[in-house]
Image (cartoon, rainbow, N blue to C red; front, side, top):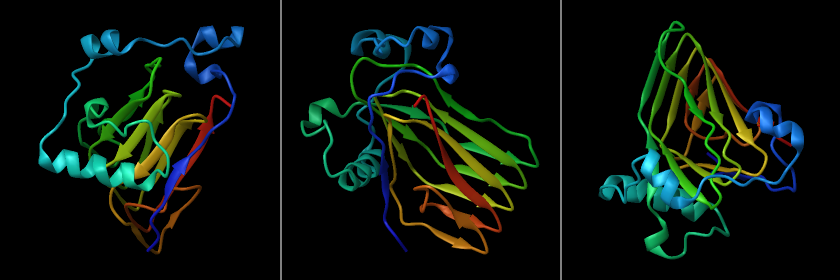
Length: 180
């Protein structure tokens, strides 16, 4: 089993996937911490969530969350997708500061799931993904960071491009870099 965090950096601006303003190729302005916290509930989490966040932070050699006061995070609820039915995760809100986003467990059976993690200042912490006879695509902004809090394994399946985490049985997981 391999413990892996994917951190992608670069000087790109928003791509077409990020909206109409992307055509102007202007630097990211994003919403402030105050605006973001008004739109989305931020939390310090319970002890389980704090452990998950700590596990993800440990995988990033350098992160801007050294001060525990800066570790409030947004949470995406768990998703279940079976035979094409269920919810997908889309985070297209751009922040003007680094923001931790906890993505709770995703269970996918006989389906194709797409996560759109498009905040260039997002530090995405995946709780765990379970894929059985499924394809899991993660659209990740080139400047965003992603890690999974648990070691993963694949049984007759594959993890590609930095997704060597979670559980995949007869399926495939991969990351598409967007906004480069």
